[in-house]
Image (tube, rainbow, N blue to C red; front, side, top):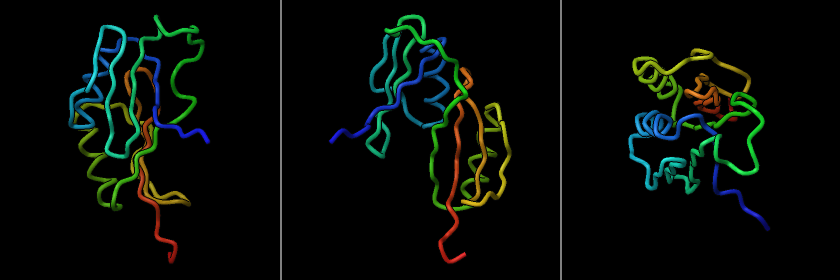
Amino acid sequence: MLDAHFILLHVENPAESARFYAGLLGQEPAEQSPTFAMFPLASGIRLGLWSRHTVEPAATAAGGAAEIAMMVGSAAEVDETYSDWRARGVAILQGPTDLDFGRTFTACDPDGHRLRVFWPFPDER
């Protein structure tokens, strides 16, 4: 059985994107070259940033058609993360709000890749 363990984003400038994600994740990339950067995440998944100009086969789509979702431990943590990211100048697409699944906000990286932070409502709600 196959197991997904790597998220690859095709980015305009891997060094710029690596700086952006290093700030959000609170860590430097474990691997970096002029065309690629990689962050190992606590979940075991790795986040790769690959130059859209060197990826093969060539990338034909831009960011924004999918999301990277990150679950936090509480509704308050959603709001705290939103405040932190906003203070960092991260582009916010949707401020903190309650949707049918939980408390969430959505932002985007410099290439338009959507980043969702959420806390799922408890089942007994």
